[in-house]
Image 1 (cartoon, helix red, strand yellow):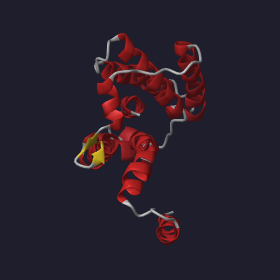
Image 2: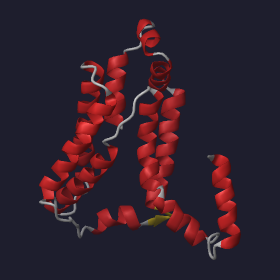
Image 3: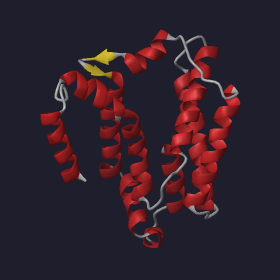
Length: 203
């Protein structure tokens, strides 16, 4: 994949006008990967533990609708963001409990959750788009700090935090142990069920 990426990148550098400009690389390509990059940080832990989560796209869409509605109802108060994150963490916890405690396959569980949460998103706004006039909320997506858009700084922070969490903490080592051999990890004293619930809540 890396070789393929380098070939395509090299081709674009020589054959696509303005491709190598800072505006294109930072504001177009950079911003286009921030959402997927941030979601991938959590998915890394799911994959490292031997599972995956199909519901992340629907949870992302649902959280977008929910946070916009909360910001509007709270007159632009950004406290809506941690409230929305808390709701999404509950959805992840639900996934984790069904998978880890009740032993239902992650594919079936998260596929069902994907449909349920997508439906909740439509119910919340009756299928209509939701906007907000909060300047402070819009600044989180459109603002620039030290020449980089805030979403890119958010992605960089997530990469650092989640990388450190995976490689420098007991939680990360236990996650890798579960992915390597779940039964061996359990027999060695790793609380496999609790960690799996935590992973899905984090995702």
